[in-house]
Length: 262
Image 1 (cartoon, rainbow, N blue to C red):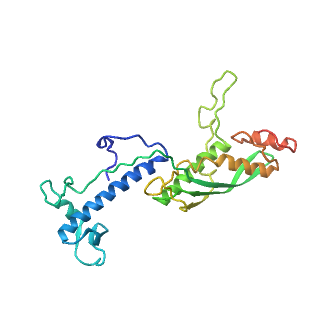
Image 2 (image 1 turned 90 degrees about the vertical axis):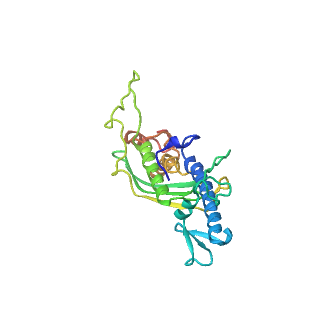
Image 3 (image 1 turned 120 degrees about the vertical axis):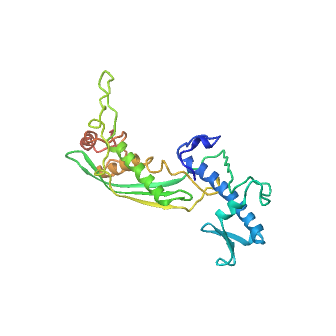
């Protein structure tokens, strides 16, 4: 893998949010499959056997029925594939391949957010006591990174739900010009998040069964926290505007016991 060399690739359409793993992952999977096929085909010629009887383990090609038997390292196979080699069989020199993946369809994941909050009716403060994100990503290439992305998205969503707001004066001048005015959650305000990743429904739209995961941590945070606040004050549908600042929560608490407006 070569990182940071975008000029080595002639074509590209950008990251495009959660399509990054779907698109680049699928293209990489296709390219890797081609490289594997070339390696097995070349090793089969060198070992005088059939490619169907070979497999690759830890960079070493060996017979499927004899893991400890005769083998070839991938590096050794690569050195054999010079430009004048009779082993190329129409392939370019070296052990490499390109992979392309095209699709006209999006891939949509699904999940649920559950929030448990406590409120202080006197100060209007809201504290998130527990939070759960359950998410089906089709297939998690790196579960730890997916979980980290979901938790990071939750932290951003928490800010939008309770603190972050652009404010202007009567002349339209911005008032939220510093972090003292535009509040963002810190590590102190972000509670531990329980994350449940599932891979029960792989996507049929790409060879790896991948779905997006980038927005899953943030999209539902405001709604989940708002619903929890509604439940805490006993007024379903009370919160209709985010963020739920202490002033807005105090106004809700003092409102008549019927659905009001934040």
